[in-house]
Each structure stands twice: as C-alpha cells, then as structure tokens.
Image (cartoon, rainbow, N blue to C red):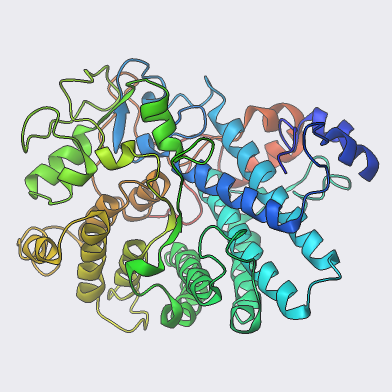
Length: 481
C-alpha cells in the first residue's frame, strides 16, 4: 500500500499518526481497498526497492552518475553533484523508508497476525521480508552513514527518531537478522509466485540470495572489523550464488506501470538526457572490451565509442548513447548478481584478508568477468579471449590487487549505479574524473535530507557530528583506504 506521507520524519507524518485510527484514515484511497494483504505489501515493497535501485531519473537518485557510467547532455547540475536542487536526498530517503521498509514492516505484521497461515508459512514469508529489509537498511547506511534504525519505523513512539551508529549497531544487527532467518528457507514456505516477483516462491533461491547478501555485508566490514568480517564471510560463502541463474532479478513487463524505470526515462519520456562518459568508454576501449556492443549504441559509427566529458554539456548525437538493452521496457532490474558475488569472493581470497572461501582470487576474478560478459549476451569464447589479454588477466594486469579487482568489478556493475559507486569507494579504483563545471570530486556519500535538517534537528546534529560532518566528502565508516 502506497502511503501518502511526504517523509516519515515530516510534520505531516507526525500529526497524521497520532492514533492507529487516524493512521488508517490518512492512508485511505477512496478508489482502492484500505485492507491490503501481506502479499500485496510484499510485492509493492519489492517493486519499489528494485525501481529505486534501477532508476536513472535524476529526481530519484544519481548513482549512475556518481559511478560515472553516464553524464548529462543539457541540464548538468546533478552530474556536478548538486543533490539539493531537485531534493534527491529527500526523495531517496523517503522512498526507502516509506515505500520499502514501512511496507515490509506492515507485511510482516500482517503475516504474524494471519491466523490462516501455518507456522512454516509464517517463518518462510518473514524470512523473505527480512532479506529485503536487510538489503534496504544496508543500502541506506551505505548511502548516508549513520541513520535512524532502532526507532525509525516506530512512528507513534518516536516521531523524531535518533540515529544509530552504523558500525557498532546497524551492521552487526543486519548480520544477526540474516543469521536468524537463513535456516527458515530450509523448512519455511514463502510467498507464492504471484507475490514473489524475484524467485517465484523458490526458497532455495532465496537462501542463496540471503547468503550472498550476508557475504556483501561481511566484505564491507573487511577493513574496519576483520574478525566479524571473516566469520560472516566464511559462514556465508558455501551458500552464495553459483551462476547467473541465481541472480536476484525483477522481470519487468512491457506495459505501464510495470516497465523498467530506465525505459520510462530513456524512451517513454521522449527525452535525450544522457550519454556514456569518457570515464568508462576510455577504459573499455583500451581493453577492447566485448561488452561495449551491449552497454552502448554504435550511434557514432560502427565499432566506434566516444564518451562525453563528465559534468560538461555534451552532444547527444556526437557521443555514444546508452545501449539498446537499457532502452527496452522489459530489461530486468537487478538487486544482486553472480558477478558481484564473484568479485566479493575474489577480494576475500586475497592475501590481504585470506578468508577461506573455497577458491583463489584469480579463480573468482575470472569467474566474475565471465559472469558479466555472458549475462550481457556475450559468448564464453568472448570471455576467454578477453581474459587472455595480459591487461585483463589477474596475474598480469597492471596495478595493485585493489586496482585490478576494482576496475573489473566496476565495469561489471555498469547497469547497477549504486554498486558501481560503492566499488569505487571501497577499492579506490578506477580513477574517476573531476566534474567539469563544478570542479568537484566524486562524493563519498549523500548528505542528509533537508527535511532531517529542518525537522529532526537535535538528532541530525548529533549524527552529523558523529560521522565527521554532513558533507559529500565525508567517508563512511567502512571507507578507510
């Protein structure tokens, strides 16, 4: 159920939630039923999460630009890191809390209260809800830093929630939450294929997703809490994705409103706002990367790719446009994939960490590249030829292990702007360009929403001081290199 709140922390929300009765009334849509089942809430939260992570709309997020996969043509404020002109931080914060986490919480409540469900059905559905909740919470931390967590969704008791420490409170609790529900995938019965738009009710697939997410959470901690990182990663590794068949995808449809949001902005809108950046084009040209024909259009000429200057005004026709796959309404949205898992395992296996994950860095690195190329439509032979290049092969590629893995990991995350940006923050690779107009470097985080600064002042001030200042250049707790 889509709630009409502008933000969970706005005064509108505070006054509309003074009682359960008022809560229901203020969320009532006269054209739709007010009693929404746990299934519908779960489906709605899933789509909201994937939409938000997939979107290229600058009103919603600018992750693809922070990763420097694309840049703007005419209106270039966002590619120069202006987050407040369109209220981007407020919109992202609101979408994740309101349309994802609150719907998941409501779904969980209804599951628990549904007397028609067996214990196994309740356990399975709650396990699925918890995986998506952990995903959303980690995403918020990795975007902003310290955030409201323990008090955040208890609007009646905590209309102005305190912020929790990401390193000592939130991240360890996310691991505990995953550990608590992973066994439920063996015996529980989840949402059916109608409600579960990711795995069609396949609990074995959900278990792999949960372990893969646990791997991700653990590897974020590798430089700041190596003990917890190692135990988390090593316990997750045996159960993670093993092929592209395991990818956590939402398959969009050809008709509105269930189309891929990228298609909405690239095609349905009729706008021509984005081109590929020289940042990614130059790297892929130097490596003769076989994914170029899938990532980009050949509008400049056959087998010719020309990137736009990041943060500058760019010609839509004279620079390489985003690929045809991104212009398709039915292109799946991706929450997590086999390539990401492979590069995380490659990192875990480096001598830097030496976690026991069942393989070598070279093995997982090569597997990540193969997974990416084949997912996008390339052949196994294309991957083998690419890996035979001394500038690509792990043993001979130039740079440190961080630079080698970071570059290929970043290339593989092309259609996943948030993870591409996160790779750069974690690995300090590849080298990014300075925004042409503002002269600013890539931000390390979103600044907190304006609503938080105006309405949750005391808690905002405390959180800002705790993380080292509410600035784009402030690094998150795990970004220490």
